[in-house]
Length: 284
Ligand code: ATR
Image 1 (cartoon, rainbow, N blue to C red):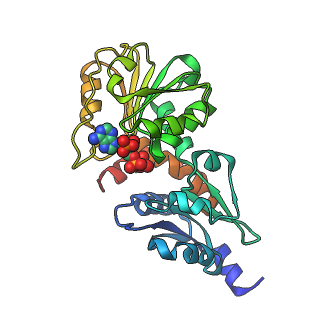
Image 2 (cartoon, rainbow, N blue to C red; image 1 turned 90 degrees about the horizontal axis):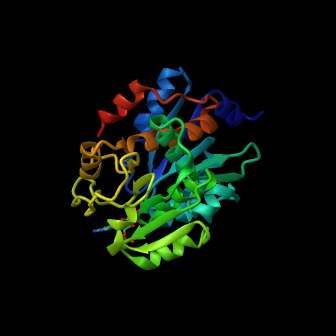
Image 3 (tube, rainbow, N blue to C red; image 1 turned 180 degrees about the horizontal axis):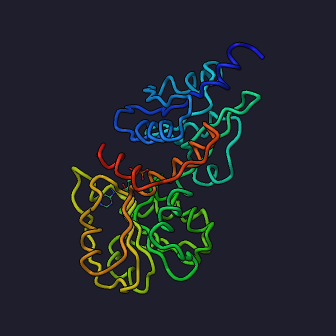
């Protein structure tokens, strides 16, 4: 074994590639687990400008990295730079986790879909995506991950609404039988009979206006999920809570998407605990 390889085995290196990367919570999250499990390793913020992305990906192997996470604006581009993409990442069209294999090749994963469902099940353990219509708002990368997660969990009817109708129509091509693109102007009535409402738009985030929607048509038993985590309680979730709905904030998805990545980098499957939640909440 070469000295570089033995260092890689003894001290595990990973990080998050983004531009900018200072906003990423991943170093705090993975750092918490590294300390908790007493693992000899590090998780670093890695600022990489878009023109240097291909070089950075190639450099992972040379530097002895176990892998990396990928954040804005690189998630789509990395899909074309890995040697192979996991089928879920290929369907979502984006990679958020890259694993360096023993032979030095790179595999791209997307753990956002897993994170979304795990966070939903934290709050609703018996959740079944096939139990009724689901409304998803937005058609960006996060919406793609949510839709793929729900389809793989058996969703039969996803009502997809996006301000720009063409993007919803394009996303619906993932599974035209199960995804119904509906015009944004009909978002209030689209809630009729739904079991779950998911916001994946930027509306309600710090610095953005609240999502413009009336929840009156949403059945009492429906859950409302916002993937925005800053603030933790968006105006949408506050309105849903006032109406008595089960609410799911965006922090759960952020924490859970990191679980398979940490397991791949460091060889330990970590727990999402209340202590972790509080530690990451403190960075918001
Ligand atoms: P991400 O990939 O992180 O999901 P994105 O691609 O920028 O981010 O998507 C942001 C989502 O918020 C989009 O669905 C966007 O709608 P458009 O496709 O029409 O841009 C949605 N969004 C942004 N501003 C909005 C607004 N004022 N009202 C409704 N939706 C909005």
